[in-house]
Every structure is written in C-alpha cells, then in structure tokens.
Image (tube, rainbow, N blue to C red; front, side, top):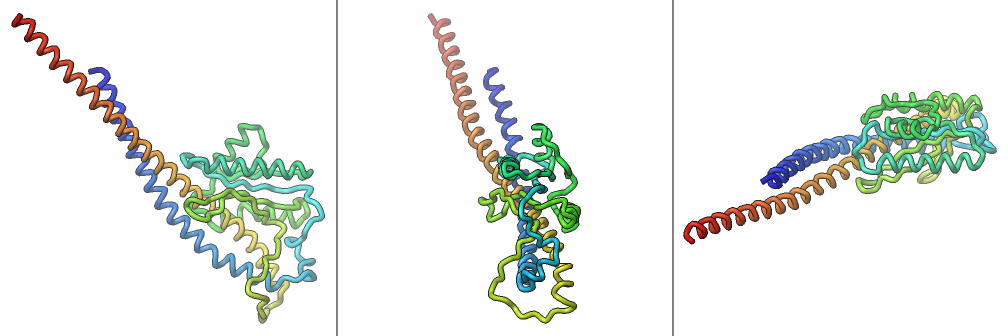
Amino acid sequence: MAKGRELKGRIKSVENTRKITRTMEMVATSKMKRAVDRVVAAKPYARALAEVISSLYSPELAERFPLLRQPAAERTAALVLLTSNRGLAGAFNANLIKEARATLARLEAAGTQVELHVVGKKGLGYFRYVGRAVAVPRTDITDRPTAQDAASLVDALMQRFIDGELDAVYVIGSRFNSVLSTPPTTDRVLPVAPPAAAGGQKDYLLFPSAEAILTELLPSYVRNAVYRALVETVAAEQAARRTAMKNATDNAGEMLTSLRRTYNRARQAQITQEIAEIVGGAAALQG
C-alpha cells in the first residue's frame, strides 16, 4: 500500500496548499476593495485641480512658471517605476518591468540620458540583477500609500526640474480600469501639460491672483498625479494577486479531484487483489 500512502500524503499537501491560496485570495479581495476606494476618492480632487488649472492657464502666464516649461529637447529625464514589494501576483510586476524597459529603450534611443528611480523590491531586484544603476531605491512605501509618500517621491524631482537639471519626469505604474483591466502605463508628469478645459472656460473671481493660485496649485497637481499612480498601482496589484490566488485555488481543486480518483482506483485494485488471493488460497486448500 506504499502507493496509496504516497497518494494520501499528496492529497493532504494539496489540501493545505488550497487552504492557503483561498485565504490569500480573500485577503487580496479585501485589500483590493480598500485600494479601489482610495482610487475613487482621489478622482474628484484631481478633476477639480485640472479644472481650475485649465481655466487659469494662458500662454502669457505660463512663461512665468518653471513647471510649465516645455523644453525644446529632452536631454535628461527621470523615470519613476512603481512595483510591489511582494510577489504571487501573476505577471503584474513582469508587465511593469517590461514597460519600463521599453520606455528606457525609447528615451535612450532618442538621445535622452535617463535616471532610474524604482519603488518596490520586485523592480529593484530585477534592475540590480541586470546591472542597471538605480538612482533612488524605495522599498518603504506600503500598500496604503499616502500623499506624503507621493510628495517624498516627486518633490526633489520637481526642484531639479525647476533648476534645469531635468527636462522631463515619467512615472510608470498600472492604470486601474477594472479588476480585469490593469494595463501598465507611462505618464509624463513634468513638464505639466495644461489640462483641456471641460465644459468650456469658467468665469472665476480670483483672489489673490491667478499667478499666486497657480504657484500653489501646480506642485499639488504634480503630487496628485504621482499619488493617483501609486493608489491605482496598488489596486492593480491586489486585483492581480486575487486573480492569481483564485486560479491557484481552482487548479488545486482540479488536482485534488484527479488525485482522489487515482487513490480510489488504487484502493479498489488492492482490494480486488486481496480478494483474489483469499479465493485462490481457499481453492488451493480444498484441492
């Protein structure tokens, strides 16, 4: 019955694995719900910022603001890649790294000197493995990113852009369209592209002045773009992990069905063999 004991051991192992993957699926579902709530909560503020900036923007006013400066050519750029600190999320991190590699290749082919900033252990581990220098590694941002996290990522880059050290800043993350649609995307957050006015130009009573308001709003607009990238990437990560764990649980169920069927057949064959031996022994004694 060695084979039967071996099958029972495998069945027990797969059952334990299925319990773990099912639990991880439930945890990822709960975290995804909270992450999606943060994505939804961030949208009204982003829309309001875009609406005010688009209404205040004018080419004459834009000349006074370094964050609106459109360089003639991108000589230097910073690329901020958002990945996760944990795996078991299917191809989530691999897709983000693939997008980063494609963006790096495109920018460097155009003659741009690219400085790489990486958030998350998965992205950091990959680029260290391939020998690519990482200017700023970050592994301290959790799956509950805050506005302070976004500011810590982009404030120094904003200042370097104002000083003329950088011509552009790109952020690579996942866009959360739905649970099944979370494509990796590359967004240029600097220089600020004036958002298109929605619903026509609005008539505002300005105090103290359009210039003073833009001075405060433009940095907030950039920080908010990075914050939205963070929360959408977290939501996409949890959606990917939920899907991966659900598939693993389903596969474990199918494997259990197959193993139990094999065990039952082996058990039936053993019982048949034992009956045949008993009958054969009885016939021999009678003969």
